[in-house]
Amino acid sequence: MATMTDPHHLPKTNLAEHRGYQIRLSQSSLEWIAFVARPKQRPTVIMAPERQAVLAKAYEWVDLQLASGQTPE
Image 1: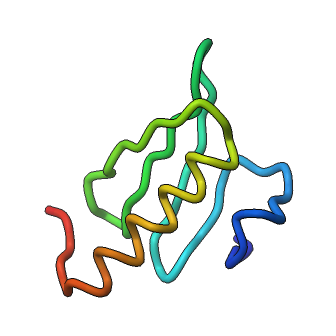
Image 2: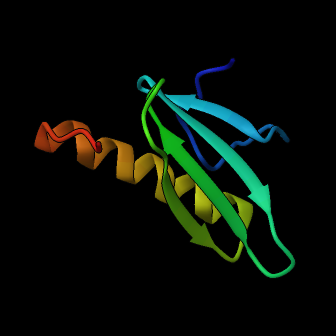
């Protein structure tokens, strides 16, 4: 898996890794969905109308989790 650091330069993949979290992207009929989790954790679901936007939100969520010292259960 490739580590992605800039959501503005995205390769066309539906799987990304950011700071130890796996981000799996899926497109529904109206929006993009990101499932974000560390290995063996329940994912957090993030939605946005565009692929680039959902990935940027996922990166921001990961960064906030790490900055606050929190990890989802």
